Image (cartoon, rainbow, N blue to C red; front, top):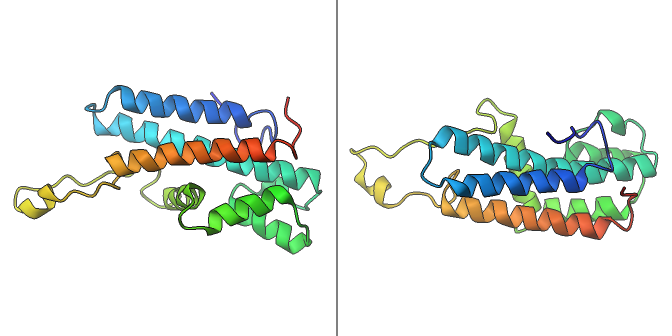
Length: 175
């Protein structure tokens, strides 16, 4: 099991990325499997990808001595802590730009995590089409959880998080 964001700001980033990619492979291994376990795999992948980004931000906060970062576990809260402290860090600039750009997979990933803390959680249940609504059966949403567009977004998010780890590695101490 991967380390939680609070336990290790540095050493677990690539490990968490590895686990996210492994969960995505497991998701692809049984494309016709039951929706519940597949949604759990999807939720785990989203969590691990997001925790990599939070790990980058927390390491930057530790390096720049941002007060109170230890209790922050979201990108938005960490960005605000940097602003409040008046500190400019290249890692946070990269993350903030990615999070603000609606076409960047990091923005989508952040929205997924925000939605996950709601009542539905990470394992959102897609509603099955009903026979009485034949048009909905023909025009299913490709971006619904576990649909083809959703899988493409997950793959894009994994690739983008990997890029950010490499871009920020110069600023971080990795073991």
